[in-house]
Amino acid sequence: MQALTSRARQVDRKPMTFIEKIYLWNIIKGMVITFKHIWKRKETVRYPEQKRAFSPVFRGLHILNRDAEGRENCTACGLCAVACPAEAITMEAAERKPGEEHLYREEKYAARYEINMLRCIFCGFCEEACPKDAIYLTETFAPANYKREGFIYGKPDLLIPAPGEKKQA
Image 1 (cartoon, rainbow, N blue to C red):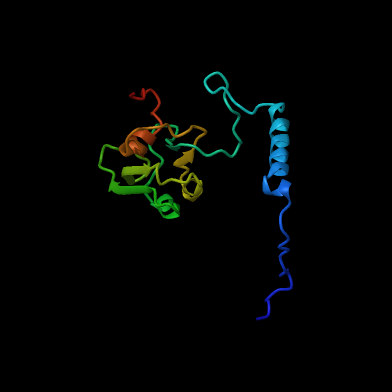
Image 2: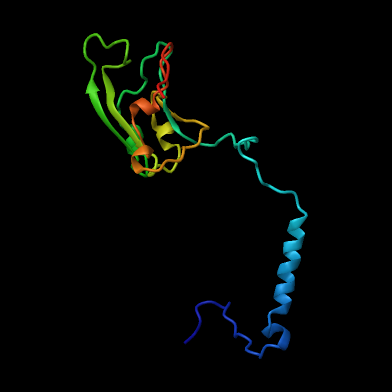
C-alpha cells in the first residue's frame, strides 16, 4: 500500500543503551528545568491584599441597565436570548399597565429575566445584540455558591438599583 504523503518515514528500532533504559538523561534534563524555575520571579497574587489587573476586555457578571430617570432599558425584544450560544438567557415579556410609566421606558418590558451562570460562557454576544444597551458585562467575578439555584440570577439580582434606591442584601 502506498502512503498518501511523502512524510512517512521508517522508524529506527535500534536497542536502547543502559542510560536510555534507566531514563537518567531525561531525569537530569527535567531537574535542570525545575531548578531554572526555582529562582524566577513568582507569579502568585496574594488575593485579599492584592488585586490582579484585568484585561480591558474582561467580561464578568451581567448587569441590566437603567436610564437616567431610573426606568428599565430592557424592552424584552429577546435578541440577547437569541444571540446567546449557550442558551443561558430566558425571558418573558409583559405589557406595561397604566401608571407604570415611571418604571418602564417602552410599552413592553421583561416581566421575568433570568441568566443561568452555569451555562453562560461570557462571550458578550448578548451585550452586542441588545439594541437598547440594556445589558452589559461588568468586571466582577461570578461568586462561588454551594447550590445550583444560586447561579440562576433573576431580574432583581441583575438590575442596577434605581437612583435613590438601596440594593437589598
